[in-house]
Image (cartoon, rainbow, N blue to C red; front, side, top):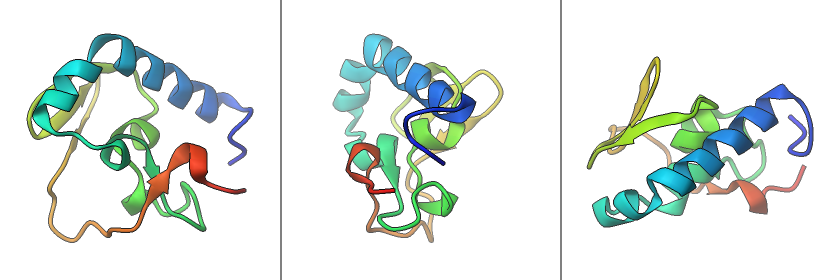
Length: 96
């Protein structure tokens, strides 16, 4: 996926902006990290969805944040799920 164009990237960008505008302070208070929100695989990007952070994976605008979940209209992202790999990088550091 090219990070600069296409509907998926536009959705991720919109979701990130919405999240930062409305939920960033609350998420920081709950201890959500940059990688839990914006992480991608360091070499494969979004191809490895198990490395993706909540806002990259969903592409939906968020509807709330809780200590262990980011809520979206139709789904949620839960952190702390066993077996999630480590070693992701922030989306903006990924090289196509």
